[in-house]
Image (tube, rainbow, N blue to C red):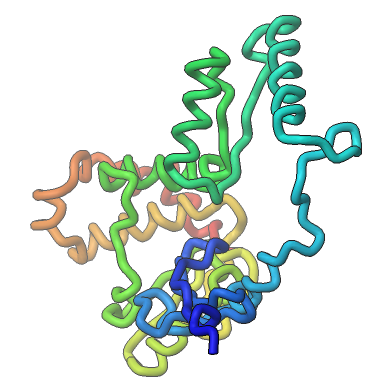
Length: 267
């Protein structure tokens, strides 16, 4: 018996941001969830469970093609390099741009940036990662001082209030959603609030669905901040130790411009 075929490789699902652990045999015949992994505990969604179907060679481009005909790598790379040089000569380096995949590794980004900025002389390097997460990065840095998500999955089992804002994990992150469902079943005190103009599948487990008008979420959050401050529900010790400008934020939240619009936020 060839034992090499039954050895397994442990890795991470490359699709969504949940980061489920997966394992598959060397012959890539099937894929299964990694039960010891803290993100998914062996569970996989339909995309993760079909990983082995996407890594076969069928239908893949195995060799470079130039003008529709198969060619060698040196000729293909020369063609790309010559075309880039021609564009730079005719229109300048700013006429060249790279748009990278969100699946690239940090090292890949580094090399691509070196090529674009260090050798081609252009700053036109962008990726789907920035397009997808730029607003979240700005918010994290302004709110917490760092581009770091200040929570972990274990918080789902520990909390008594879970708020989903414009998120539909039932579709986008089904494994994480299953964890929410299990947490609610295990903890009857857990309340789930969905804030979303749409009634999504995630509303199935919600105790409250706030179907606010699109674009009115800032008014709702300012109204909540004003309410918490007025009713003494703010953690003053935390505020004093970790925040700046809190009093000014409360003052702005209570201003007539915001208060007058909070009631109109609900759709």
